Every structure is written in structure tokens, then in C-alpha cells.
Image (cartoon, rainbow, N blue to C red; front, top):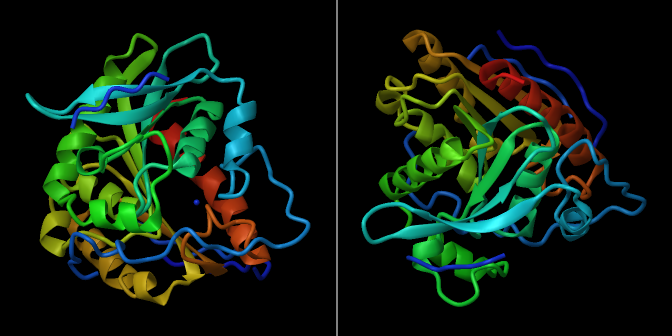
Length: 302
């Protein structure tokens, strides 16, 4: 089913170890680094932008969001295997009962302030938000600082789907083992991370929900392994990614896999981080995030 609606026109202590388809306004098998060369750092800012605290911060307001957050957050290192660990930013919700875990996967520059602000918003919405840096083992220096586009792109190219899934498995296991956590988790990713979110759904039988923001799909053969429901959120002005949606929708339907998608007309690739770049991006962000939270609450519990 495909419904089209219109929107207004319109990124501690540190230890280092190394589909039903619906369209709302606002692929083929891909290579490992299919988003690695995109410049996700430079986005324009429209004048008069006012940040809503009900959705994740924009790239330009993320620093302020984290600084003013009342929630407890910390850097942790999570053991992946006998020799490797990854860094992650963990944010706890303010609630009296245990919370489900949502893992937030960064864009193509590795973890940055914006990704950490997404984890903070997930906590604001009642989940334990964990933003791991999948490039930890491929970078050096102060990994708490935002990498440059060049640094991030170089590291991202070294993260195969197998490495990514191994890391996400470890992060999810860590999150669900926290005393404040319930043994249930979901995943959300953006751009490159959106592709990893979709890919993780083909791999992890314990995953309860996957949200894909403007990311490429896995192959049809891989989709046969998906157990968790998938929600796809896409910008209307993103033809390269959107060209993969019809085949994805058809394949998921044929396989009997739950896949719901929304296309936000006028919005561009990266619209959540770039919500202050245009009215369409902002409208898309304001519609997409509530859908994300509702999806997680439905699949993971409130």
C-alpha cells in the first residue's frame, strides 16, 4: 500500500581498544562503502530556524542539546571479541522502570556530536539510547572528538557488514545487560548507518525493530533472513536511494516480511540532521521522528 501526503517545501572516561509501504510528504545489493564518499558535514542553515525539543537536534544545535540535557550520559568501552572493543555514548532515560534499548548508528563520518544527540533524544523518549562508534578500531587520537569527513570516510570503508554486525551484536548485548534495561532492543541508522540498520535486520534474530533513515537495502537473498519489522524513512529529493524502494517493497511483500516506508516530499538526503536547511527538511523531521518513536514503542514496549 502506498499513500502519498504532501509537506511544506523544504547531522567521560575514555578507554580505547581497538513492509507495508506508505509514502508521507514533508536496491540492489550495494557495496560496503556505498555512502562513504558523501559529504555529510556541510549543510546550509535557514534563517529563523527554531529547534524543537521533541525531535533530535539538527547538526547546528546538537552541541547545545547535549550540554543542556538533564539525562545521565557517559562514554563507555564495549568488548567486541577477545582483542577488540568499541566506544559508545550511552544515555539513560529518566523513568522509574526498566527501559528497552535502541542502538543509533552514525552516518559516514563515524560517531559525532549529532549522533550522540540522537541517543539523547531516544532517552528523552524513554529508551536507553546507545550510539556506538563502529570506526573505533580504525581511527586513532582522541576518539571523543568529531572526526573530519576525510577521517570518517577512510575509516568507514574498512567496516564490512560482518564487522558492523559483530560490533552491533556486542553493543546490543551490553545494553540489554545494564541493570536499568529490559532484554529488548531496536536499531536506527542514518545514511551509511541506515544501510547498516537494514543489514543488521538480516543478521540478528534477537532484534525487535529496525528503522532505516535514507539507507540502502540489503540484497533480496539477505532479506529472506529478516525477522524484525523494518520502517524506512526517506527524503523525496533522494532519487538514488528512492530508486531502491519499489524492489525492496516488492521483495519484502513476497517474503512476507513487515516493511513500512514513508517518503517525505521535498526533503533531501540527511534531512533529520539537516532539518534546519529547508522547510521541507524540517517538516520531514517533524513527521519522521514521531513515527520512529511510535514504531519503537509498538515493537519494544513503552
